[in-house]
Amino acid sequence: MENTVIKVGGMSCQGCVKNITGVLSALSGVASAEVSLEAAEARVGYDPQTVSRAALLEAIEDAGFDAE
Image 1 (cartoon, one colour):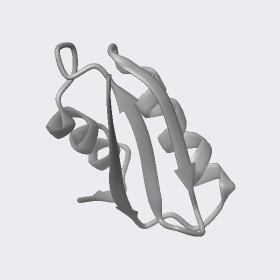
Image 2: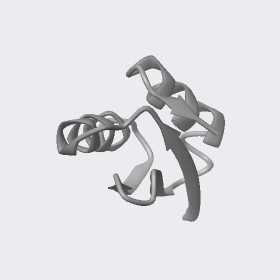
Image 3: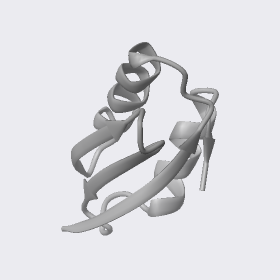
C-alpha cells in the first residue's frame, strides 16, 4: 500500500469534496481517500499493483477538477 498527496484545484464547497472522495473511492485498488477543501488536496492510500497514480489524477480530472 502506498500513500500519495494530490493537489486539487477547482473545489469550492463540501459537495466538491464528496464528489472527489466518491470518484477516488470507487476506483479498484483505492483503500482510503481523504479530501480537504482547506488544503486543496487529496490524500489517497492505494495499491500500486492495481491502480496507478496517473489513474487517480485522471479520475479527478474526469470529474471536472484540476489535479497535479
